[in-house]
Image 1: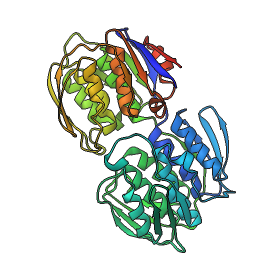
Image 2 (image 1 turned 180 degrees about the horizontal axis):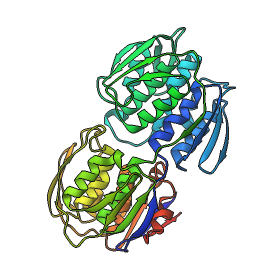
Image 3 (image 1 turned 135 degrees about the horizontal axis):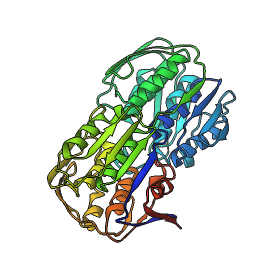
Image 4 (image 1 turned 90 degrees about the vertical axis):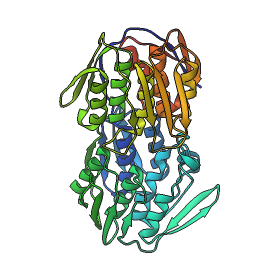
Length: 421
């Protein structure tokens, strides 16, 4: 297994481009199942979760032609409704294949999806199962083995999400697009990736009203076509790079991004003293001689402070003057990784599973660490870049799930980071 070796304290400067959004790519790939026509997807990030999605599609009978960051997907000859357990239980995004398969073929069998070990109970899928039942499907669970969902005839539904979920919102939206009747979804997530997916589906014949708001109304259609979809720039990668630049006190320009998608973070960075400017598709972070000020944050669904940016922000707060309270409201166990940051010299007090207090500024020192999940992994990379000495990070396959060729792109900024076996 590979690991990163990072020599900290190097001066970072230059330009870095944002890749296609993981959370957009992992939804449009299974959306290809809604149509028997060929879809072309551009600006795909070259990350592990995309590779796993393609493997799962091909196992179902899809044909895929790829060239770099572009793929053509033909699902006209599907030959299975079973998600391969050796593939599907490796990544959380496999759950997104269930709704389209159910809507198109009326049946699907799948294992519990895998992915990062965050969230109470291994990130249960009750929201998805409840939604499929609302559409008229029957669900069967063989504990520890698989779920089996089938329906002789699906129908529209009036469904209220008991709590906001991006993936559940997208799954129900896709499913409802291809079944008879009118579906009303309430308490929906409002992320930009949802709006982009809905726009694409509408362009192909779906009738979705209200995407990007708490309530969506969907008129089911008999057929959905396929065309070209451009994956959004990754807003989480954008925010991670902006936080990295601030933590390293570096002059870095972030290109191919949508600053509007991370306005909450931008306002907080300005408030704590980060010098930055931005335009329609770029952000410039400038080094400064003025110290940063500590600032509390509380994660919230979009357009609030993204939970996926909480881990990098904790690293930033170790370099700010004063005390900051970090309140994680979305996932359980997402703060456990901060023990490793304490090993590097950070002054962090754990209040409870959802809150920590960070006292800064504190000098960080290189350590040998293990990446527990995707977002904590990139946070440890940022910590290693600003630490004194050498940092080793094992289990970097977690980082590869969401960040394309990250060591090459950071090296272009002047970072001393190597991938070794």
